[in-house]
Image 1: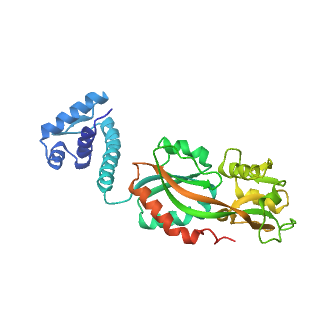
Image 2: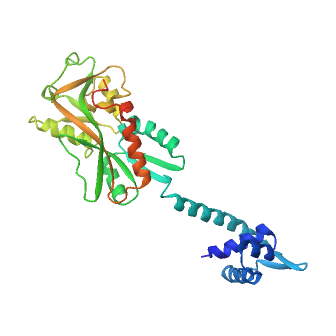
Image 3: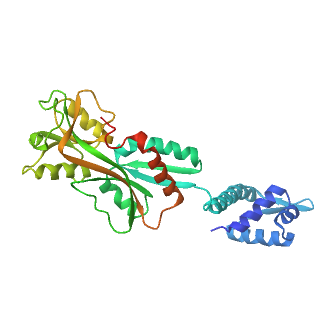
Length: 305
């Protein structure tokens, strides 16, 4: 691997035009410059300098390497600046995983706020199910996870994770406007127990909460549609093909033809921010703080109709 300090010397020679000028800029002797370049020639196996008049100049190989050296030196300086600013400024990458409804309802406003307040922060987002994103969080491939937990099936968190609750919301039964129960103010889950259901895949929080709720009534739910995206589930509901259990925050945008009915025995879902304990970096703190700020606009329990 090429030595950074020697690349810095080569860059100085190329930039300042001579060994003597580079030595003055680097505050070392001309012989020190020559020693660095000699070692660099041995590392690369190439001649980097050639005689020119009363001095020397870069060879073609020297010019090629000097162009790379300029970029390497600039990147090293940027890295040093970023590290020096870590204690003062929120910057760098922030890798976020989130369930789909949190991506739609919470993250757009939160990310816009982060961009305004912390322009050097570089967030990235992937959506998916908690069961799929927990391993990347534990292994350090994600920094922050917006997870869901249902009150009849609390989320199990492995040791070593920290949690901040964000949203506590009601879960409602979604039925077609033509459904016999659509005109009711409230519905018992037992009245829908035999309906065909739409939910996410087996093993996901929504699916397992549905199964547990219906099994508690002494029957097995008929889950005919295993659909990743809740808007697609609602399209099936609107067509009269299924019922679904939908948290308030996930009800927008809803297609026409869907009615959301409160349950007589309430179900609730909580959205929580989860990160590795001991790894609460300034970017994570900034993101969680911004998410808390946008919650009234994103919709808490009772604000989604």
